[in-house]
Length: 171
Image 1 (cartoon, rainbow, N blue to C red):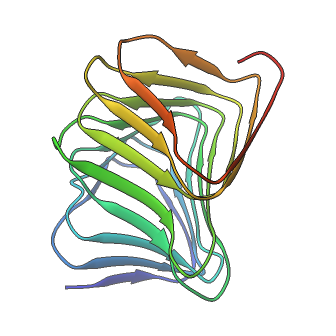
Image 2: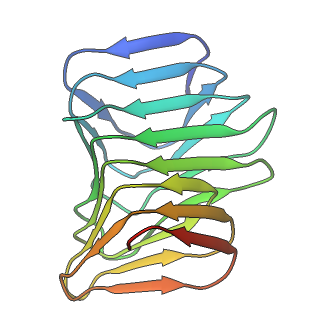
Image 3: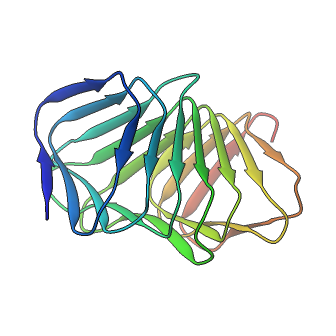
């Protein structure tokens, strides 16, 4: 089944995004004022200027190999000021531009604990990136800026495979 949100919503209790089918943010704003988990099943799509915000102190857990994208009507945005972590799924989770720009902005912590996380999306990054041993973070197509970011050890692979990436400040 499909779920669609097209207005502003702040979720204060624990949030779980689950189940097959698409989950569509159609021009709305979703503020995750609590910890959130997404099982990575199905599609999470941000269209027509839709925005998801993960605030400081909150954790967004991706526990699978999902697909987040924007396909039309205006760029979508995922803003992470807390922690965005991929904790399960041995395969690849993808965050991508797909016919429309998807901005993934990270001023918090992005933590890859399982499998691979592929970014083929635009974004502005001023936060921390952790990549566990044997795991992979790929930056593919897209236009990104990195300013005073920290890439912490952990033994994982960090790859820049395409797109335009600009670095300023200490990295």
